[in-house]
Structure formats: structure tokens, C-alpha cells
Image (cartoon, rainbow over all chains, first blue to last red; front, side, top):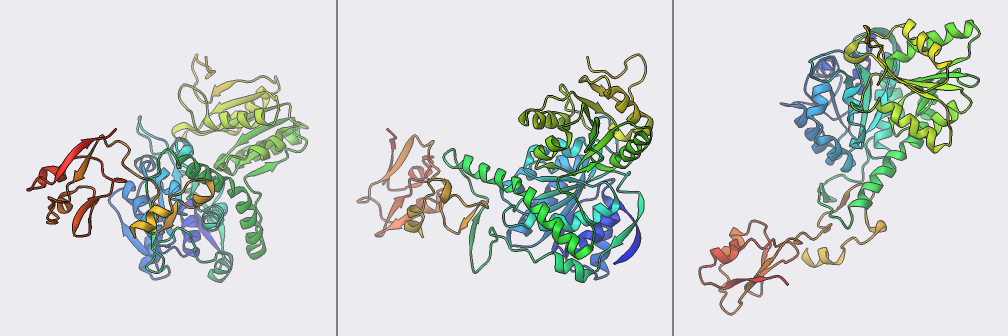
Length: 392
Length: 96
């Protein structure tokens, strides 16, 4: 291992290089650009032997990756925001085709108003596309996730494309010290790609076909089972990862001081670091606060959430997302997890960080303050003025 | 390859592959459900020129014993073959 000073984008690119993809097709978009720039440099200097394909759009980027994957090549692409939305037609196509493509998405606001800064509306709007969705907290996790994402996506029981999300700028552009594993370690971790849906001259395949009303449901059910199998594949990948690299991860969620917590904040992505600090501060004051970080949104960690919060007096979901006309989508999903587990815990939703607006430690602290009245509410952070941000 | 296609139409859960792929030639779905008129070839008139084969937009016309035949699993009933047949060997009949 070598320690390097890397941004989230660069760390992810190093992770992708270690995975030795054979085809990279991508189109640049802020704040994702650096990951593909870095990979193009790796291809240029010969340290990564891959076809780097300059495409004319994100729609083509993913179409190209599907073509590569269909002949058994390990394929990578990356995008963000408007690019992801432009790619949207191809997302369920790749998932339904069971092509284990890996994509990094730099989480960024969606227009209008035009905005290049970070929130998670881009990826969360695509939750139903059939892709695995993971959210990294820091640059080290970004690198490790890059490597693990191929293992998980290509797992025989999964065979589903993987979207690894990094918060735009806060994570993609912030520099941290990162352990970069050796290629030998990475090769030990990640076997070569073996797919069942590979076209070859020896074994010609029929792919991307129609399936009418008679069989369609079965195909979709099997797609659903594939992504549900991610839960076991993640556990397997993380055990293997720890053995080789010595770093451990905690599956679909990460609990921080939730065991005896009265009040738990559920969130995802880079904001978790700050929430952890607030939890520590409150703990010093003798207040039983906890954090549950969702590392994956698909498959959704229903059981893990229920298990972590079942003793809490109230919980809140803090997310950089709004499903207009309803509430934050993560909150909707969390409520469904509680309902299915038979838990009736007051659950609130705090929507913040839209278009890159900072979420402060004070705001997080005040969420924990408000939770003590143990009722459910949906609030926007950072509205100000006469409107307090409470949803009417 | 055609007879092989017909023999292996997937019927239930076990026949559906886990990864949306079949060995080449595997027919997943017949695709002719919306046809309301079908081309019928008068094999006595047909001289086997295969002009209809060249013009068929769905590639459903094939040769059988020197005459043309139609694959009704895929024919959409557009009538291009009837229109193009110079000797009038193809008629369109209503589906019942």
C-alpha cells in the first residue's frame, strides 16, 4: 500500500484502475470530470490497458458500456446530474440486460435553476432504474467502493449494474490522505469477469430481446432477486476485502452509537462525518444521540434500519433530496422499513443541502433538539424568513 | 434453426434465464399478435421469384419446396408482399 493525497474523484479513479476495466466510455461533466480525466491519463501513460472511448453524450456513454459488457468486457463509465438524466433511458436497459457495469456518479443538483453544486436529487430520482446504489462518505471509502463495486456487480447471483455515488465537490474535490492498495492485492481480490450473458463466437447469445406480457413479470422478478442478492454479495466482498486490505466495512448501513440511542439521525454520504461529530458532542453532554448511515439505497436496507432504530424514542432522516409534492424519498423508504417491521417510532424528515447549500453542525444539533418532542414532521433546512421551512 | 426455435418456447419460471440471455436462436416471444389480415400464398401460381422475400420488412418469408411460405409467428400482416407480387399469387385474408 502507498499513501497518497487524493481528491474523491482521484481516489475513485485509482480504485477503477486497480479493477482493470477493459473499456471506459464517458463524457465529462462537472463535478465528475476529474475521474475520467485521471483515467484517460492512466490509459495514456500505459498504466491502465483499457479502451478509452470518447463518446458524444452520456446516452452513448452507457450504450457503449453495454456493448462492451455484452461481449464480456469489464466496463466503466461516470457521470453526474444532467448527464445521468440524459443517460436515463439506458439505465433500466443496462439493469434489465443484467450488464454488470460500474458507474461513478458525482451527486449534483438538477436544473432548473441551473446549479453545479452537490445534492442527491440526481441519483435518488433514478432509484427505480434497477441499479445498485451506494453512497461513499470519504475518499478512502470511494477508492475501496470502486474496487468492491466490480466484485458485487459481477457476482454471479447479482449481475446488476452498480452506481457508486460521491457527493459533488464536498467529496469529489476534497483532498484526503488515501491508502492506495497494490495491483497484486487488487488482483487477488477481484477475479476476472465471468458473465452468463456474454456474446462470443464459441457460444452465440440472444440478448436485448423482447419479452411480452406472458414472461415479462418473471424477467422483472428475477431482476429484483438479483439486486436483493446484493446484500449477501456485499457481505462476501467486505469479508474478502478485509482479509486482503485490512480495512473493514459494515454492509448496507453503518451504525454509530445507535445501540442505546434515544434519538437517531439517519443520513447518507459525506454529511455523515459532521453528524458523527455532533453525536460525539451530544454524548459528552450525556445525551443519547446516534447516527445511522445508509451506505446503500438499493437494495434498501429495510432490516438493518429496523434493527438499528427499534429502541429509539424518535428518529429523523436528513437528506439532500425532495420528491416534489410529497417528501424526501429516503424518508418515504425509511417509513416503509419501519412499517414492515411493525415499529411505530416518530420519524421526521429534514431536507437540506439542496444545490450545495451548507448544512451546519448547529443545524444538525437543532434537529436532535427537535427530536426530543417525539413527533413527526417534514422540514426544509435553510429557508429562513417568515416561512420556517415547515411543510404545510 | 427454425424448428429448434419452435421447440423451446419458454413457458414458466424455470425456463426464464436469470440473466436476460438465451443461447442464440432461442425464441422468447412470438410477435404477431396484432395482425388482422394474413398473406396467403397460392403455391400453384407462385413461381418462386422471391421478390416478396426481398421486400418483406420483417423477414418472415422463406422458401419451402421451391415455393414461398410465410412465418406467421412474426408476420404483422402489412401486405407489402401482396403488393409486390407481380403474378398475384398472394392474397390477404382476414384473421378470425
